[in-house]
Image 1 (cartoon, rainbow, N blue to C red):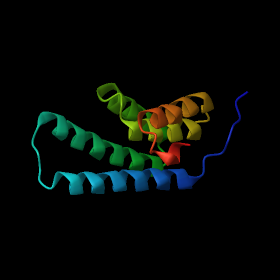
Image 2: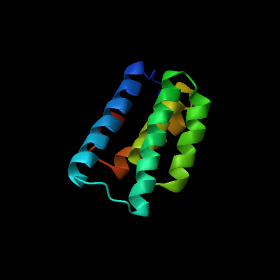
Image 3: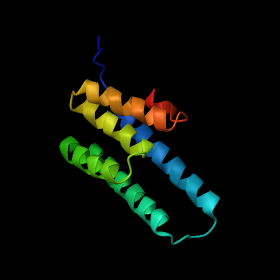
Length: 116
């Protein structure tokens, strides 16, 4: 049995908070800018996720879903993208996909307490 829950706007705020903490931690860990292709792509993805959060704030859930699916097609293990996509699916009342993405986010990163 699947239960439908209302996802409060605080979930969007939490997504922004998680992204900001992870960006801060990455800056502190790296100490300097590393120009490898993989890290450049990761930085670009983070910017895209932040832009998606802006779409969420504007209530553009379908647009956010499309952008998150693009991110996940490039980096399948991006726990933040799956987390935010779970929130998007919940806002779109697709609770099965919301639960799947939130569970996948936790599977990828068990430290992601906001997806529980």
